[in-house]
Image 1 (cartoon, rainbow, N blue to C red):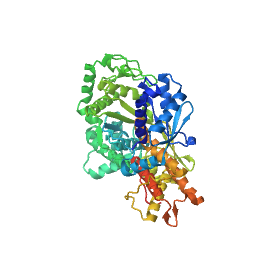
Image 2 (image 1 turned 90 degrees about the vertical axis):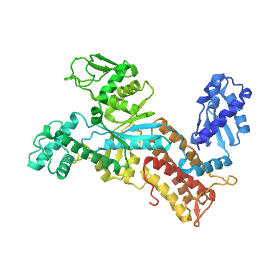
Image 3 (image 1 turned 45 degrees about the horizontal axis):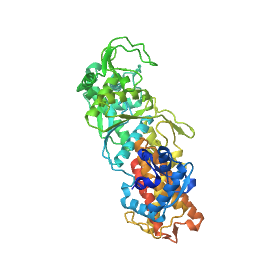
Image 4 (image 1 turned 120 degrees about the horizontal axis):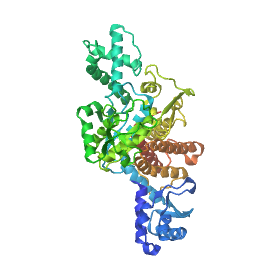
Length: 574
């Protein structure tokens, strides 16, 4: 039940049926008419720009047109009780009490589906994709939560979503990682000193991986690195991915698919993808200038295959080959996205770290080229997370080597707090994560405040011995909400719009913001009842108005739907 869609249909229908009375000839802009919640100071339920939009194309004074439309709406749309013209021609609409009751009962009947909109698209959401050279760090946590919640949001709307992790298990960083494990194994077995060379991994977790490999592979031979590389690579990566999956599971995240870069190479997908682009005439042989702003000491002016990414909006064409003729990382990534396209996804979404912003244009161009411009890749970048404890920056982890691990974070605060607070700001700005704040049992801790609202509603149900599954509706004939209830109802009505906007803009942070605002309205109402008997919900162990109980159930439905999307639990008691 989306009241904005419901009444917008009535508005458009009424306009078209009365076009002669309104003296309208141009209706192309009718699609630009919208319906919103007006600013709180107006004390109205809906606001539409219909008069403004139509007056411009039909060259009519918006106030004059607004006056005519107002009369028509009050005459023809039963649910509109009062309409006022504001500003340059906005129509602010007050719904009747009967219509509010009608809408509330509709929502109470659909419960868990409230806010969802039937869709049936196939999405691939790739997120985390951290190099499997060690445990997850805090930056990965933010992208992991963002990707998981965005996937939940898309699934809530009925889409089929594949949560995917791309394993970068090929290249020099993997060789350095395996060599680090190799040297740690020799340190443990033969008491050889671990000498930290350039590009090796120093963290304590490397020792743990080495110890695990020794324990489970008694006969492993590590006399020569080159001889044991392949076996040690498989064992090291398997253990590293186990650690990553364990961290993800503790965060409530389970991927549907893990795609290996090594498998991509084995299947020769890079050659196939490049040949496909050559057939489309999007690849040329030529010489590129060294990349701007990047170290170019190893760059040579040699002929190489080049992707014509400027034809798809990129700043420059991109090399597919290195100096020695081997494929670039971009060529491998291009092949990976070609495979995604072959898997027939309707939409592709990548969640990237803060250091990948400059990579977006080239891979987005590749997807357009590979799909004949039929599929667009959406990339969302999650900026850095700054951790604070007792007002000071949280120190680095000795275990990880040079970063703060996800395990460090999980030792300090629980999964629910991490998931909620990682979305406490838009993904494109840095996030300050204060350990003390997320442990507070106050309004200053958003996740606690939302959970407490739900627990408070359940305490009311327990007191009245009401089963949450019981169907309790409002009576249209007696329903008469007070000013606090009207504010909450408007916020409840806004929920489908929040879902729609969050999906269209790929901005799941709007969900926790909304839930906090809704919970704040409910807590304020409860507190007012403690001050003034007129607003008291419970009196002498009984509910003052049966309609209020239905109204409270409405709040619980929306909070539960929202927290399910966030993957955050809702305790019955607090």
